[in-house]
Length: 174
Ligand SMILES: CC(C)(COP(=O)(O)OP(=O)(O)OC[C@H]1O[C@@H](n2cnc3c(N)ncnc32)[C@H](O)[C@@H]1OP(=O)(O)O)[C@@H](O)C(=O)NCCC(=O)NCCS
Image 1 (cartoon, rainbow, N blue to C red):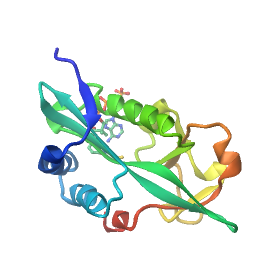
Image 2: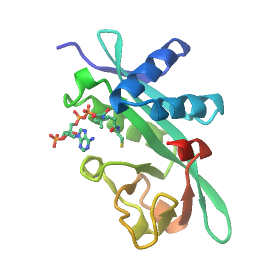
Image 3: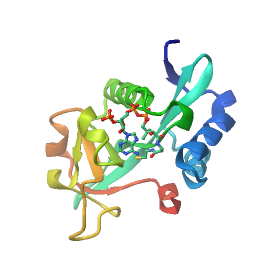
């Protein structure tokens, strides 16, 4: 079994990331989203997973704003994340999430948000964000909220930052 390599994207990867994301989701909007974030210089971090020199996974990171009565803060969000359909359920998505968490800690961030499957992300330490004092346009008042999640990277962060979390406007099109 060849070993998995995870590294930051390069210019040569861009079209492959597009095709991979489109095939993983079975539609184009998430692939378009990655391109829109990159075009707006909003892709703060973009990791590819390679097996045998082929891109088999990708994870995108952009900043969200967190606004309370006094100020706005900025922290990262993970998404979209995609693994080639032929390579899913072999741990590649997990390796990408773990590498991203490490990279965000290294970069000094205290929180990592995402909107995603409630059965997948808790294993990496993500938990529902709303009970910690974060709201989002992705949560209807009184509706389900568990898909809006956060990983606390710095235990002090939720105490110092709370408020409404806004993803990059490109997410509105997905
Ligand atoms: C979600 C995704 C990135 C996971 O990557 P992966 O390499 O297949 O995942 P891993 O092999 O690391 O983990 C497998 C586990 O994830 C679970 N899983 C995979 N896709 C899932 C999904 N869509 N919803 C919930 N759980 C999922 C599997 O059930 C498996 O769980 P188990 O270990 O308890 O059996 C990948 O399946 C994918 O690209 N899906 C299509 C795009 C997508 O839905 N992206 C995420 C949007 S939030």
